[in-house]
Image 1: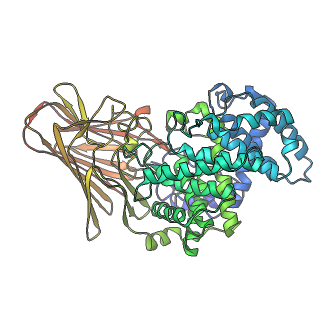
Image 2 (image 1 turned 60 degrees about the vertical axis):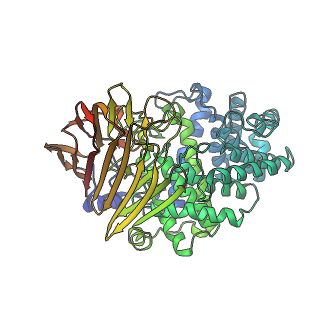
Length: 627
């Protein structure tokens, strides 16, 4: 893994202009001790000097190439991206709103915007796309630019198209969508009211629907289940309350004290995973830059609503500035004129595949611009970020925290362990339908450059979970049915235990209980070391064809001795396994099966044992030492 020593970093900072994106760091995993070259620059300057430059490029390219636009070999308007017209409207709308009214270039930009609106008005635009579009129309109207930016004929078509009724039935049910889309529908209804296209009656009903949903699926702990009770809690479960508060604010409402209380819980998690590298959430889907901007959304609205203390605001802002800096020098590729979530060994969900390249640029820039505006309004415009972020985090955030998501037949929780500049996140949940067998939803100690899942991985290579191939051909892993989570502190060592009375039988879209083997799991987290011990207890004698265990590591130059692998390069220095017969290591050779959202794993360690009749408990243990 590439690392920057202090001398190299000093050179980078010395040559970097304070108000422009610097040359990218090497396109590999960001080390935990990496400091974005723009880290000392205010978030507002980073956004003003970089985000708008990117948007100006897209504006000119769209005005010239129109629906035939090609980006890095991809044709966005032929990709089936059903949010794209709204994202185009929002992204280019930022350019109009940022151009002074006495700027001679404004008139041409308005003409180009009008032509692009005429071009896209006949294209599919759904849900989030509707939200993005109508929110921009409201801002253009408030700025006195709407009539010049959108032709009367196109505006009339938009009045009919930009409607929550396209995905909500007359009985107020969502049409084949997750229940969090009530928030999108509510926002659209309120924005239609601000456009003068309807009264506030629908907004009131949809608000109640949204809040009822949140209460039903967030339970007593305040975080929203992504499913109807299956127990999937991920980035969006933590972000959703911030989005709800944002919806209130952007449509002229004030969030209630109850909502602010829920937001505080999300803000605590965001502060607990904050770091100097600008890294984001490390578990669940839709990560990469979205895992980072999600944290900035939570923290910016928390600061604006005074949910954070004055001191917390200072350091939440410092972290947010580093996220913006990281976007500009890690995710954005000047040679592509685009962010890059798909090359350089990076892998993202199919949902955010490269076919959506234009829309992803617009939505991420929109998030950076919107959160920057929130920070500006919270009093941080052009404020230089605090330089002692790491020292503050070490002193003021807990070394270990446990957040309960759900408790009942099954337990769902998130443990966060802070170890210097490393942040370990152990998310113990059920991925539910379509996600239970994907490694970003496994109960693993995710940490940047140490342990990562692979987007849309499936179960062919279950990262760090022993896989039992039974004599009947079925395959079992311990992924979904977690019970009885407990934690114990012993000095600076933290122990987390849980059990599973059923393993997850693979092969179906939803997890299937298989009670032939029970599992007791113990994690131990301490400075520079994470250990997992599994005790598999058969119910009666069980015929097992094979047990295998894989670890895809970012570290390189592996040497193997017995069941211990040492690495000469990378954050992980040693990986050791007991309970299985043999281990081997090999380079991943750039296989897509071993790509994290932020870069490729380098080495695959595979341990296994052959046929056995499992009559007594089998203990399998692995440990990872890191620097």
